[in-house]
Length: 369
Image 1 (cartoon, helix red, strand yellow):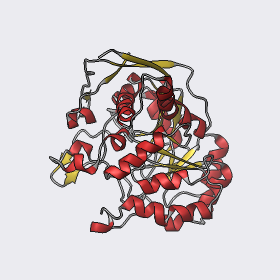
Image 2 (spheres, rainbow, N blue to C red):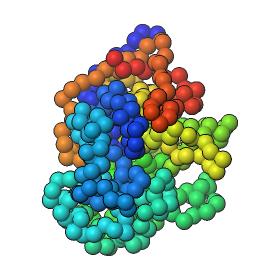
Image 3 (cartoon, rainbow, N blue to C red):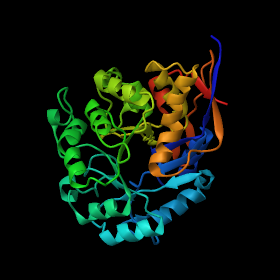
Image 4 (cartoon, rainbow, N blue to C red):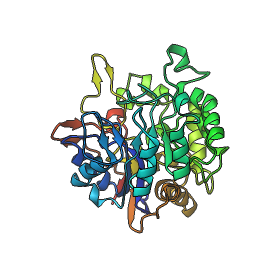
């Protein structure tokens, strides 16, 4: 097989987790090693990043203080670093208005209560619709990032071939949100279903966009349950083949501007425990390579300029433009060769993290050079 080499602007991960503690610098270093030019760092720390400014407090951190922590751990090497505000019961209109005016507040994050890691402080969507807080986000131009799953479901209501927590949310709540707050700019995070894809594509491109992870482009729920591959367990859970096909069709559509990279890379030093499995796939050390593989599986020929343009829009262009900053002027190269890439565990002071390819036995066919 002859080598394929492509050059792209450095990419942006607009949904990732750097966590807290001594391992943060290792996670940031992994991202930088993949030519990542910037990141949107999720605020579901313990305690949550639920205030805009000021020092850390026992019940909450601030965007200002968490940014400083990340910068000290190496995030100063990013061109862009966005920390969203964790929307909680303590969020006020004054927080939104002052934060937006200061420039610290560029995005806010909705979590369904108890819907994922450290989301216990989330407030149900029905309490936000029509609220002064959402109106303040709308008026201030702050982007609302949504973990789009309905909370409080059980059994077949949560995951079934006819409906899942995500499909219910996008059919029942997202149209109401769009109607109640028509000028609120949304990012539908880590979407997994054809219902979510349909919602985004039917919405105005300047007000609704979505991130998609590498695992949701590569795998289905069959891969997860065949042998209980717990390194693939994440929330929202991987779905059915029809959903994966909808995601693939969306990202490779000619000229699409609404879908972009957000890995939801989530490091866990202990993935499986006696009381359950930690949710999240770690791809911080190999995401561009996985995305390249996913685009190929979706039928894109990355040896052709037209195929490279599709990957470039997804990785390097659409996200920055939606968030209002310029794509990176720096470049990186991806190479496909007959020899598989070497993907290593991330060894850090508070424990080792296994990346998704090692957990799945996946041979990665692309390398960074």
